[in-house]
Amino acid sequence: MEFVVFLAAYVLRRRLDQANLFAADPLWRKGFSGAHTVSPGREAGLLRGLLLVALPAVLLVSIEIALRHSGWSFAVHPLALVLLLWMMGAPGLVEMLEQYATAWRNGDMQGAWHKVSHFLPPAERGAASSPEEMHRALSRTLVGVIFERYFAIAFWYVVAGIGGAFVARGLVALRDHWPHAAARSGFGRLADGVNFLPARLLALTFGIAGDLPGWLKTGKSAVFSLRGDPRQTLMSAANSALSGYELEPERFSELHHEAWPDFGDRSLAAIRGLMNRSMLVWICALALLVIAGIV
Image (cartoon, rainbow, N blue to C red):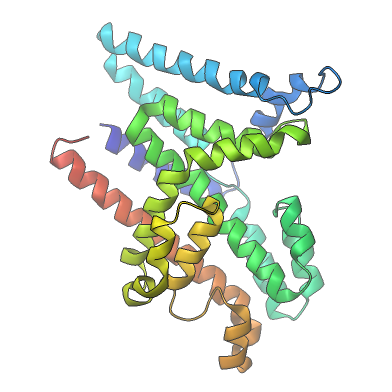
């Protein structure tokens, strides 16, 4: 039944994303707003944020156990469906990327920057000193966001239930929305640790969903590397799995100079296609695990 719940949540969440509905980030920010006040010198503390994520996760696990032991197991699935719909997704992303691709096609790089600058992490905004660097930063962020909002949640939902998925999503929310910037890097390291395994699994999936010979040459090293944050790992593997230099703007410009105005749209379409095919691989693998009685 967990497979059906996840599949339904994924399909519905994709539709909600296209309609720009049911965004989770405002609720995370509101949930963390009470932590604005802190004693001087303790802005980098992590305990309060971790408790705000751990306690609801424990409550969710307790509710699930209580429902199953009381004979109300069927009630667990609607609860999981609602929570997955809330935790997954990136509403507004489709419209933003379409506007970015249009600006790129028109040669309006400043306009393209304004369309996506709010989407990039602060460190990436400073690195976008040229159209090539801007697009590379956007691609890295896009791959990371889709991974965190879909694949990481799917992995931990299957492995650790709805409580595990909540923790994985909560750590990412702490990294992005915690009121005190001094603590965000610490939450980021914890989120990277939690996402280590699903990121490597997705990097492996890129070889199946993309250009396998190209991935075998360079991408497989990303799977076995113990260094690098998940986004960099995924970018390296994705780049090797795409055969048209969609993540290498300089190389693409050299080989297809006449098609440069279409690069932004072609690159984003290639990323979306690779991620969609990878999710299809995960869904098929999960279905096989269910048939085998493992999940």
